[in-house]
Length: 384
Image (cartoon, rainbow, N blue to C red; front, side, top):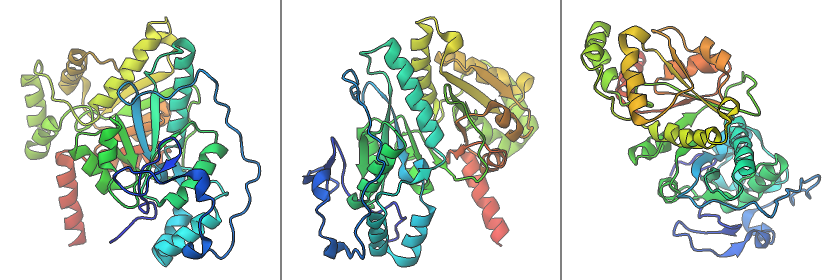
């Protein structure tokens, strides 16, 4: 069995309980895990004692929303934190050495990964929502999803406390697929470094995207969550993209003109935009439209006059508002995204994801629609 370094764990954590198997049965608390038989895991040195651990203050009014009321964002440990060193240990030395390494370094926090600013922005929005609606459960709920073994959970918890993140819900699967758990959490968005699991999530109707680590990262707002979306095969279906791939640009324009008043079908991330819109309206209801901590963007290669009107009519018919819409008519997206500085940008084509990343934007790939087959054929051609 081939495993990724963070594909090594089992069970589910709820209220700091360890579940040893995928059926959710619990067997012990995290405190009990400090009594691990070190001979069994082959530790050569004991973990260093915790120093400088930050104490999190949880006010009496803070509570955890029910999944059916929250906007649940599931984030893998590989995109929330930087784990390249640990991945190298796993690939070169195997699972057992990887586990020993993690336990020996469990009091050394991971550094932030590509999803870290996004998660911090979600928490900033929650702070504003709690001020306006103290008893509301309509909040972002962040679930940490990892393939790791439960032993690694201690290091993850230490890291979360070190960075002062408010993440209490874990899903640790011991190498098993997390998709069933994501459905149980009623997940609105899943971010992972594992493209196969992202495709699996999408096939189950869960909005999902693959994130990548880039050395160049642009500073983003700490007070306003900014989320940018491509249109076709992201917010919308790939219907129009199929016309373009099969028949070219002229036929695409003709198809859009003929179907101007026909709504596009929904794409994989339409539901997440809808969830963002519901939270935005809670701020609008308090007279804070101009000071809303959530801002959304449509960044599309479509032309405004030739094909943009159908996209806008579809969004309006869905009852969704986009704060800013950029119709680029085929121009590169990277420079525009550099000006927007979103916490995350979703696109179905790796060409645009890579272009955005080169400009410092955290971009996520949505492997959905006809473009994936087109890219696969291109890759086969290159290899030949």
